[in-house]
Amino acid sequence: MLAADVFGLPVARVSVELGDSFSALCGPAAGGSAVTYVLGTAVAAAAAAARRQLLEAASDVLEAAVDDLEVADGAVRVRGVPQRGMTPRCRTSAAPSSPRS
Image (cartoon, rainbow, N blue to C red; front, side, top):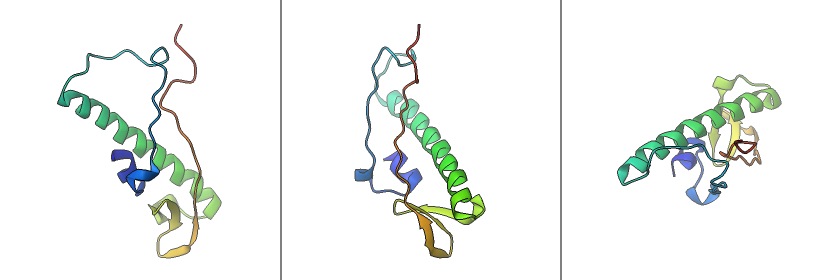
């Protein structure tokens, strides 16, 4: 829900894929609401960074300043000119690209 909110998407449009535990970083023991706080904060920060990267890439394609773009209904568009937009298709992974040694 946090990532969907950052991107202005319905929750059904966001999927979560769990990585292999071997490739994950070590962390503290999980329990209760601490998990929501820690993971929720991380998800929100990662989604905000991905959104920023998406807007930067879209600004080149749409020839518009990042500040003039908005993310809504699964599309990036120029504010006030909804016909100038694009629907990105992307897949991201939170897992590191290579396993730890």
